[in-house]
Image 1 (tube, rainbow, N blue to C red):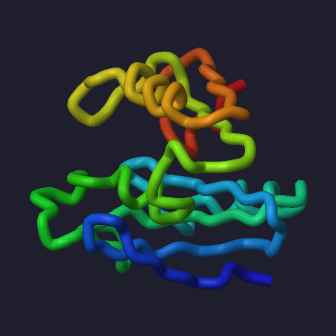
Image 2 (cartoon, rainbow, N blue to C red):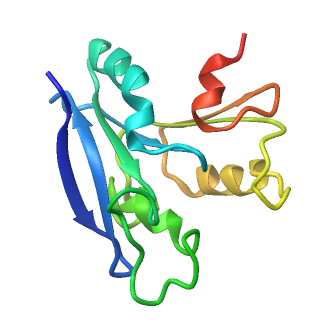
Amino acid sequence: MGPRHVSFPTRDGGVVHADVYGEDERAVVLAHGGRFNKESWSAQAQTLVGAGFRVIAIDFRGRGQSRGGPGSRSPDDGVHFDVLAATVDDPEQLTGRKLFILTREDVSGGGVPRLPEIREQCDHAPDPKELVILEGSAHAQFVFEID
């Protein structure tokens, strides 16, 4: 059975489109890397559904049909709202276990390391939570190709 297509508003007035796999109460939000889209998570989504999770694979604003709010200045402006819209709007209010995964040397398109920002986001999220830092520089879906 294929994914269900859904959409939901963001805090800044945008709209996020997503594919939902499975029906379980435990859920995982998958956010793609810069060269990908929500469909590129299909293989990982099926694996997670098989492990008993509902999976929400989102398209960031500027990808597919997703778009930022009226005040967005660029496609990357406000992408954090896109992830939050897939859960709840206030990261400090997220319940349940949270898992943050990234590689130590992952950098943004501008060469800025992502680890400090992700670590700060994890620090602000309520327990239970875990930050997993893998060696290397893989980003997004490429993390799953690490040996």
